[in-house]
Each structure stands twice: as C-alpha cells, then as structure tokens.
Length: 417
Image 1 (cartoon, rainbow, N blue to C red):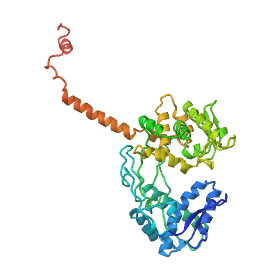
Image 2 (image 1 turned 180 degrees about the horizontal axis):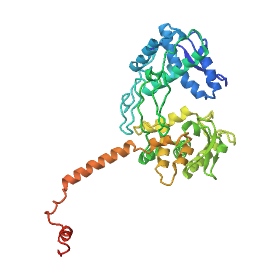
Image 3 (image 1 turned 180 degrees about the vertical axis):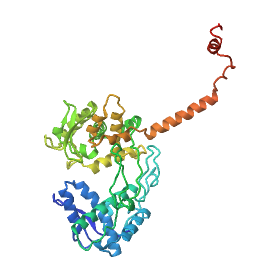
Image 4 (image 1 turned 120 degrees about the horizontal axis):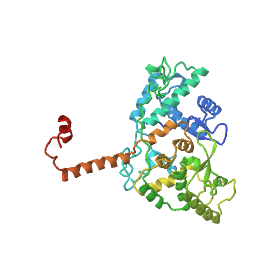
C-alpha cells in the first residue's frame, strides 16, 4: 500500500480550484503549472479534480521510492503500472474516523445482502465495484501522466529528458490512423505502451417494471421530480442540478440546463408528468421556507439550513433507493434509459436524439442500437422454449413422395389431366 501522504486540496480561487500539496504542506509546482495550462485551454474544474487524483497517486509513489518527478525512468513507470494491476484500492475512511490511527478504527459490519466486491448483481447483472483498479482507471491514469510529461518536455522543465510513459512501440515513429481509407471511420488505436485494453461495454438501462419499483421507493416529491426529469430529458445528473427556477417552463414543456462539456445553455423537452411532480415539490418547499426567486437554484436540500442540492447528495439519495431493491444502478443509467427510449421510437430521428443528448458525433448512438443484456437473454430463453415445445409436440411426418403433376404435364406436352 502507498502511504497516505500529501493531498489534493480544494480552494476557493477561481484561477486555481485545486492544488496538489506535498507532505510538508507545500504546493507541488510542476502540477500547479500543468493545471494553469489546462485552465488556459478552457478545461473545467472537474477535469482538474480528475487529473489531480491521478497525479496524487503517482506522486505518492515517487515520495515512497524517494524519486524526483523529473528523474523518473520508464522502468519506474512500468513498475507502477504493474503495481496498479496487483494492488488493492485503498479503503475510504469515514469522515468521523479521518486522522485516527488504523488500529483505532472499528471494523464495519457488512450489510445484509451486500455482495462481495467484483461480483455481478443478481438484479442488474452489473459487476459491483471491485477491490482492484479497473482497466478504465488505469487507462485514464496512463493518459494523464503521458500528457503531463509531454507538457513538461515541451517546456524543458527541470532535468526531464524522457517521458516515463511513452507511446506504443508500433506508434512511436508514426501518427495514429496513418494510411487509412478516408471512407473508413477513425479507429481508436492504443496510444500508450502501458495503456491497458479497455473492454467495450453496452450501456445498461433500467427496465420499465423496475423503474416503476424505483420510483415507488422514493420518499419525497423532490426526488420524484428529479427522477422524472432525468429519464424524460436525458440530461446528465450534474446538468439537471444546474437549473434555476426560471429555467423550468411548464407552458413550453422544456427545462434549461448547462451542458457539462461546452457549458452552453440548452433547453430540453420533458414529459408532462415531470412538471407535475416539480410543481408538487415547489409548493411543498416554498411552504417550508425554501428561497424563492427566478435566479434561485431549482433543487434544494430537504432540511434546514437550506442549501442547493449537489451531485453527491443526489447520488446518495438514488443509491439508497436502488439498494432497497438489491440493485446497483447509478444516476448515469437514467440517462442511458432515456436514450434507449428515444432511440426505440420509430418516429424519433436519431439527429434529434443526438441534439438532446448533446453528443458531438451521431456515431456515439450506435451502441444504443445494439440489443441490451435483457433483450439478448429474453431472446435466448424464447429460443430454448421453442425447442422444448418442438420436442413435446413434434411436427407431423411429411407425406409420401409422389410425382409432381406440373412436371408430368410439361414432360408429356400437356396431355396429363
């Protein structure tokens, strides 16, 4: 296990939302310079947070080995990549026990019905979160560190001579998708030598009957309105939480959100039921004293002191609800569910679906046109049922062979009647 030293610190500075702090409490300057370049490239603060966690993990490895960041070799990057394949992820410590000795922290009792890490859920078929680092996590780490060292190589920072995370041997002297047919699509070639193979997964949807059970398990009008809007509009969870009270327009049956990538304002169509639940939530919230105004946030906490609802609280609400059903769906599965519903409508053009989802390329919708896990299993079970039915009631034997009257008539010149 790597020592839990250093941290990724959140600041209130708009020009430096996150900073990497070393064990002595000082800012890590190479990371700060890289973050400043990302902000200049119009990267959101969430990107800095995601990259910062990968850089913190790498810096903890450097601190444990006594290495300088600009003197790391490819053997060091190789060893750390192998460590990520073998090591267990560090367990998250509850906020009540942070700062205590590990011996003083009581061992939590396992919840009833909680599956072992990395096992498939019997309701959804999705794997639960495992103890090891997933291939997507390792691929993201490799991309972040490779671009980080490429950036400092261009600046000639420190004593850096080589990138510890190089390109693949077959790609080092060439460019990706070289000599391809222009009529063919762009292939996703492996870029890094230590980049793992990431399996392609089919998006999971929530079946209609299970969605009804999830909806019935919600305990407030706010949660019902949120779930209805997520499934009706196809907005991301964080995008819907960015709406203000003036963005909900029941007369036009649209709701405005701030897009995650472009941060552009866009109005999305929603179902009438979603606005009915929203009105019930607003009437109940305003009676309790929730701030009211066109520029006020649309979604608030249910208890005082009133605070705008954030993503982590919304995710915790949805997780508690689906765990009652023994499922492990996530908030993003609601977006997949909305996409499947729109893509399966024969009168709904995929161009409109692409615009509603905010996808840059229409080819991203191809994965929603493939059969889902439930559809494949249902088709396979129906096949086996038909096979059993044929065994129980075999078809009648074919009749005895006889001469074809049309062939005889042609042979004898139409004399056969």
